[in-house]
Amino acid sequence: MTIQLKEELKTLDQKHFLHPTTSIEQQQTQGPAAIFTEGDGIYLKDIEGNIYIDGMSSLWNVNIGHGRKEIAEVAKEQISTLAFSSCFASFSNEPAIRLATKIASLTPGDLNTVFFTSGGSESNDTAIKLARHYWLLKGQPERQKIISRTHSYHGVAMGATSATGLQAFRDFTNSHAPDFHYVYSESVRNLRETIEALGPETVAAFISEPVQGAGGVNIPQKDYFKEVRKICDEYGILFIADEVITGFGRTGKFFGMEHYGVVPDMMSFAKGVSSGYVQLGGVAISEKLHQDYCELSKGTLMHGYTYSGHALACQVGLKNIEILERENLVENAAKMGDAMLGGFRALQEKYSFIGRVRTLGLLGAIELVKSRETGELFESPLSPIFVQETMKRGLILRTVTYDQDTVVFSPPLILSKVELDEMLRILDETFEHIRKTIVEKE
Image (cartoon, rainbow, N blue to C red):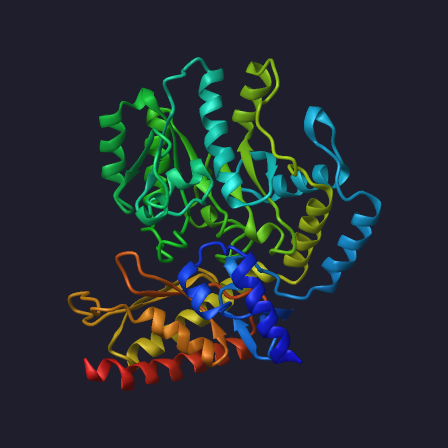
């Protein structure tokens, strides 16, 4: 029966389901890579009964782990009383008010006001639009340019795609949105030079992830964001922190920017705010910006999504944050992240084709190289083969192959030492397989 059901679903999937960020060719020739049916803690189960460690928290987002009955219960209660009501025209609901207040208490500095969305792309589009609208209100309409970093990822809505520094995402379509510019990922000097070349009076905002996720888990140099903050202040440019991946404990602090002692003017968030149990995101803005909006805005704020402030989603977000705090999962992410780094370094000593390794909380990466000394890569990337092999052994991971050959990690924040050891065992077994079958034959 299971085989029959799998084949039925495979056929229907190929015919009717256009998958996000997927090789259409692969889907049409091979069908779904897996059809998941259950989730429990750090584990996923597929239709055939195979069990996998979800080493990516699915899409960097299932921070509290799968299968939380508490979330189901609070969702059932909320959906049976008030699932949704519009927040347009100043209508409101208690879960949205309570969640906005809670997030304001957690964000660094004076980020005290929240606009809700349904996800990360909407959050970054919102931040970009709010920045440009801000300068219109301030009487500086020429400030419309947005600067981001190479290897950055900000989403797939039109503005978010245009801000993304990974060329492949922008090449997906033509007729790109105007006034987006990119600076070298680690160069503060290039940021200053670019602002000067564009004209500071034309730049609305700089946007950056605290740690670049889809670009390869790139952790910045210690003082990078302090220098960025100084430059933005010097030229009067808004600084947007994209905390979609790094927010709500992923890096071992509630928000990634806390590692650098920097407070942005806006902070976009999603993913970990609800741990993927419902679609939810938002933008937190500073007290200064909010006061300027209150004083200068005289008409309707002409931006909003149907599900901005969705009552059910916000109630789930509140329960998710309660679990993060009650179970000390942010602290666990820091502790287990250090242990994960130790495991990566042990593997690095054992296998010569492992290049740089890094973690910040439970966000990590292992680079694969032909030569550590020169950084030379293999002619064909190893990481796609590597993650296929880890999946055969029960561990789901992800690769980054934009100018690199990297395996990235983002396990749920509930990860225990025993579970981490099992992850590392699978990695060791897979590296040994790759060494014998590929590397030694190069």
